[in-house]
Image (cartoon, rainbow, N blue to C red; front, side, top):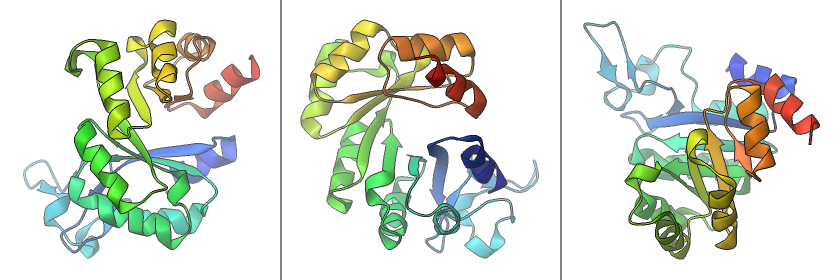
Amino acid sequence: MESFRLALRLGADGLESDVWITSDGVAVLDHDGAVGGRLRRRPIGACTRSELPDHIPGLAELFSAIGAGVDLSLDIKDPAAAAEVVACARDVGAEDRLWLCHPDRELVASWRELSPKVHLVESTRVKHMDGSFERHVAASAALGIEVINLHHSEWSGGHIALVHRFGMLAFGWDAQFDRILAELLDSGIDGVFSDHVDRMLTALARL
């Protein structure tokens, strides 16, 4: 939880995490999705909330700490977590600041039934796209996807312009270095994911 607070203190205007659902229906934030020692690893989905270590926060706990005024991008690692994620956001009035991410665009599009306000993000790779880049983006737009999220190395000015032409946003992840951040911003990217808040703010200040 402290890492989220630190990012906000440093000036980040959004947070990102992976979300899982426990066996008793609690949405929690963790990268690995498993707990325990090397020889006794258990998936989070097989654990109750009370069985998880203290360093794994619940989504409701995060919302309690940050409120509804921060954009929150969540990689839905367990699709069963989606409904609870939206419910947690709705409880604090943060649905319109919630970005739901997953590589399966049809699954992502189905989450529109959970809320008319949340943002739908397809996190994919070019090699996984169906046909040409343009054909794939057009099909995603038709499904109601709002954002294409790619590794930073797969974006070009042309790709970003094409995504914009379909009324969508372009996000880039793993943007860890000054040069990469500057190139993405110069190309017209709409959002970046990085571990370095200071570098993101410096890149923005140079625009």
